[in-house]
Length: 229
Image: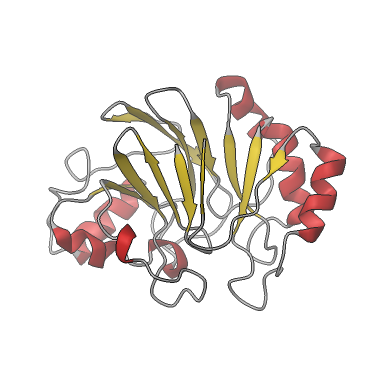
């Protein structure tokens, strides 16, 4: 599994020949850099419809091949933006919903709740398991919630992608508590530094992580940088 952070909440996961792009906010994202290598994914996952998450989804899908998966209401909305075309939106254009698990090839994708606002449907997170069993949790925009501990009962989370920026999502203290609930082996922070209102570095997060979840390894990625597992 290769994980690339593209700034804010945007990530590319590459494993077993499949590229999955999550929350592709490129246009207007001051941190993402050159994205030409990231505009032809096999699948786009979007956690919710805010512009800094839905981002460049529609323009990327003009390639005619990239598939899309999100919560059902967002899928219906996306169909209107694409003139009713649902061929690229999985499951006949209906997408999925919270609590569901679907297959994309040999990948398993579970949609989880996330506590945040949205225009269409509900906000969500994703637990993505590749064919080897390597498991990544993208929390989406969310506050802290105790049921994250239940995810740890069902899934051995290798990497958690968690917002730490505060203001619109949980802050670094709550994100550290989330790591403890999730029993995550590694954490990559996201949704910080993009805008002045968000926290600008991971220093406080590192301190809180050492206190509340010292067994979780912090991975600080620069935008457009990758780590392989």
